[in-house]
Image (cartoon, rainbow, N blue to C red; front, side):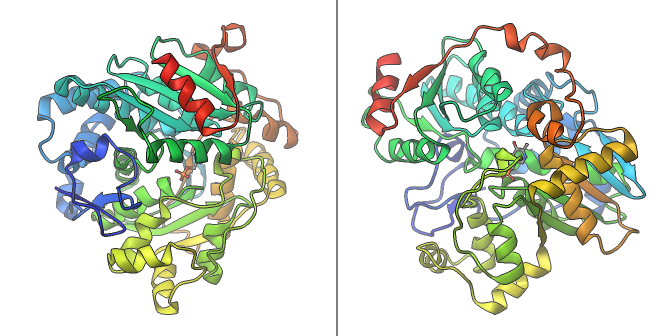
Length: 458
Ligand SMILES: *Cc1c(COP(=O)(O)O)cnc(C)c1O
């Protein structure tokens, strides 16, 4: 299987090449040239598999022989070993045909562990085999950073640098990053905001001449294809628990960068019977505005109680738009130069695939309160947005509605307190988080300050 760029001007790449890079040279994102498809019978035969066994079935065609089966199996098993629940992704019933899929049993308590544990192990395997060292560089507003550090800290062939905006991430989130121990782990607090961090990362990828000879940068944000691939698995897993593929299920997905919901869209394209796919956004609602009004104008950034979805542009949406534009990279490249709406016929097509809702902070707190009153079950603000969107959009109560629970509420104490509830305790493996020693450098807000620091540290 080859991977092609959404902008149509970069050469096709293998899985291994795509794993070891970021954006395509033409500025696009890599997608498979053709998706693997599973028949109903094939999916039915996956029922009863453990999470790692199922992951192997789903992932194998994407890897396309780049890793021998036995090795892949070991990589996958290791990736889900540190999860605190043997089900890996347990389903919990909230109400009649309403479910949450708990995706926060990984080491950093957010769904990003599903992809980044696997990505770390895939990188480690491939780099050892190539006898190559790389530098991972990423920016985080919170959850990505800790999940990436946890996923990559064991790899001798990786140095990982994670930028976060100085004094602008929550204390739990900062400590989850800065207390990760490893010679190859480096936290940089940039004296700026998250956009500044992202700009610096993008510029560094554009000109990598600051790196020592033979080193290259690898991306760990969701433009890395392997992350999307890993997330497809839990859509199949959830459906199979609830009678799939013989009956359809629906998903409501809290999303900012369109990574998680795009994986759901791919699961559907691969043959999984999915009825509704609901895009749930906070007040940073570019995706909801597009779906409801064909308005793709970039708004101002709003700081909400669900900070992991505080974005202005949704980078993975480009991968879906590529399909919507009939895989015409040239037309998409033109659109991406700043258009605010698309051809109405195409837009109608998108509306047939996705529904959407935008949920503000006040409703988020309300839902956290409601769900706690109904079930004595505490959800985090991102999850609450998914639940609220599901309740707004659910058209057919005979179809199970699965809301993806993307983080543990302990990570977002602000929202829980604002909802009038008590913050839960940290899980056992993190209980001493506030006593652990922190390691991070505070660096000026600029490309050179950051690249100088990286060069000096390597
Ligand atoms: C990253 C994140 C999201 C959004 O994920 P997308 O890839 O943008 O869909 C939602 N919730 C939490 C808790 C996150 O960390």
